[in-house]
Picture 1 (tube, one colour):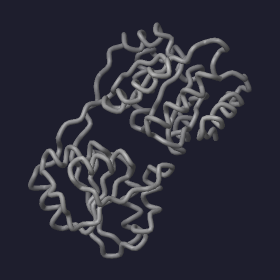
Picture 2 (cartoon, rainbow, N blue to C red):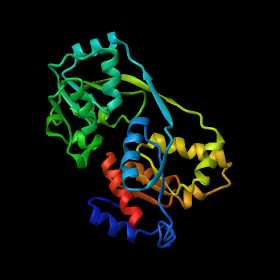
Picture 3 (tube, rainbow, N blue to C red):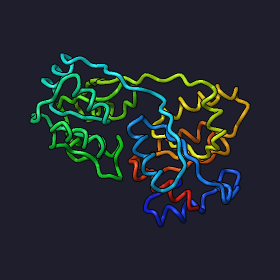
Picture 4 (cartoon, rainbow, N blue to C red):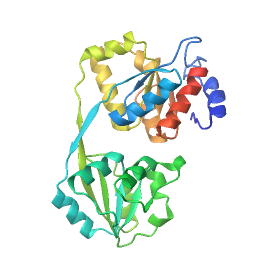
Length: 280
């Protein structure tokens, strides 16, 4: 497993990384890093801005758009029934609030999966929010919080998009909670023309940032279709930067050979990792 933490550790670890075929270089010496960002638009822009400040060439391609998916009545009903509210993304907060503006003071205990989601809640006036430490901004980190260890009989509402992992709900159900979802938004996946993949090759993209399994799977399907499975550049030569153990495991199972796990999805963590790679 390739873990990237502080900048000094990043540089030494990135330099030492090897592919599964024991070829020593992640990047050809002297070849600049050229990054494809596949995050949703707002986060892609944030990361791109940080990379631009470091002089790292990058391009962004959002793979899906968001649209509202829950009614005011559905959200209001859920709030009346809930003891605990969990928000798993910034979009979950923003689209729920757009459909049914939350009062500043809620009686429920409120959790956010990470700091960005916590800030989104603060932006709408909800300041009493619990969240994992910056190193644990994921489902497992949330579930490790002591405040979620004893939830027998508690009614929990998870605000999320359509689909996604069931890990939080399943774990809390096993702990004795009654769990329901409010899918406040849905993802609408874009259909990319073949020419986009051709443009990436022309731009000499050699590093792709992927922050979810859904994005990873969608992107690999698109690349396979765009190249008619005749070009293994993306699988065997391109560097893939992922943000969790789960995505790393899945990426390798899908045949990707150059995978680096940053163990964090914040724009700054990703920028630090990519900066270390660009210096290797």
